Image 1 (cartoon, rainbow, N blue to C red):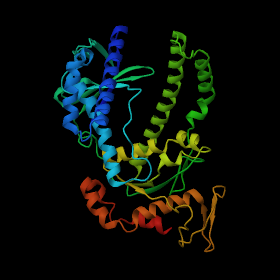
Image 2 (cartoon, helix red, strand yellow; image 1 turned 120 degrees about the vertical axis):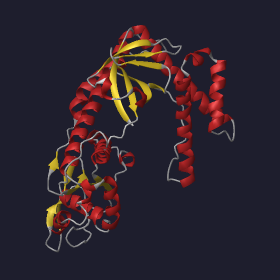
Image 3 (cartoon, helix red, strand yellow; image 1 turned 90 degrees about the vertical axis):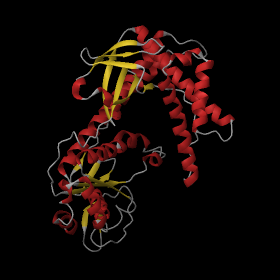
Image 4 (spheres, rainbow, N blue to C red; image 1 turned 45 degrees about the vertical axis):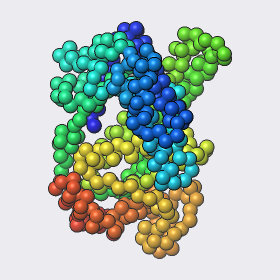
Length: 401
């Protein structure tokens, strides 16, 4: 799927209608979950039938487009199915039992309930919620695609307004220009002092967007808390303060996202293969002393964009188990235990290297050694542009240095 996003411009009563549609989606999702909990052996078809019963029972549910109600049902079944799969494979820890939604921020339509005017750059929602016609604000040309390629239309509510996402059925590799082979490969070691250190001894400083905005965000949070009235209806001043606080966090999130996107694109354009750590960030943030710094670094976002651009441009990306990558000597393989405060690796074999750079070299080594045979099939699947990496001396030379 290829997503185009535009900001929606309308009147206040239209925004209220969108809020009502989003609340209805949340209501349908939670009712379907409750129906599954109260009735043993309920399957997907039974939940879909129950959605039809809700439309006949509640008038405000019937006003919402039928495909939007189906999509709310799909959200419920996706959560249930993920729970079943986790139980089946018996993952350690919590199995992800479905939870009731408290803050839904989107409503999604399929092939009906909307009409796009590409000439006037407007979109009209035609269900019973009376959202009406809204103007689209964005730089992307609506004639870039055919209207039949739109599979779904999603309205998303954020702190700074309402947005519409057009989900297109496109193969991103067909519309992306191919890149010339670089005959280079790189390993990445994620960290907090540096966002990552690569096997070429390059290091990138983390932007620390949250740390920079923390003082301002704390001030906005205190202002919001002072206006909160427990057990009473909140004033407009509280709502404004809450919106300003949310906008501050949204800005930090977007800054981190754009930085990761630019960095990932640069890595993909410069290398045929990128090897990186398969970090379980969800588990790492349980460390209270490092959780804020880990979240601010944005490791998951960087990995997400590396993998996305890897598929888009036909580059090979490999996630490597990070165990002992900073302890094992790259030259002789001896394990040398080091605390986090020790930043230089010194081995009895005479090898001396920066801890992070050596870890990046070990990550690249793990990604390459023993996988040449499987690479041939994977790279040929991407096309001839990347198959030149197999058997080339570039990676082997780097590993033998």
